[in-house]
Image 1: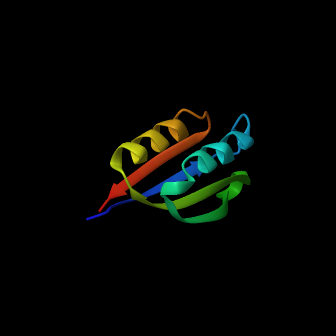
Image 2: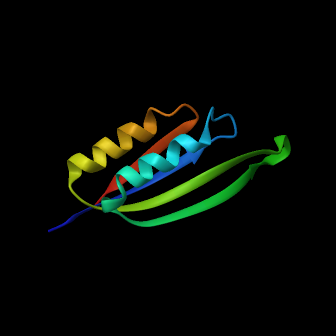
Image 3: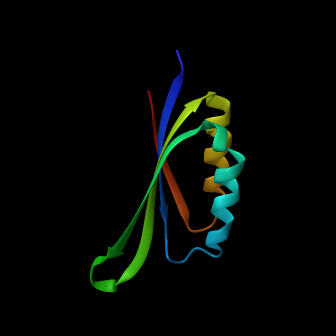
Length: 83
């Protein structure tokens, strides 16, 4: 049975270079089945941040590699769940 992982990324407004994220998505595009981007604002501070939800299918080693690459980007936090 194919493995499925859902990962959520919070991209803060303090990210050094948001353009670092897209090449990682492209590199692992073969395991990304679904991607959804949401934009939020933090209450009274007015700081903006983004939430990206992704459904991954395939190899658990690739899931881990993708997640590690994303976690290495300053200003990005990642959480996941496996099925």
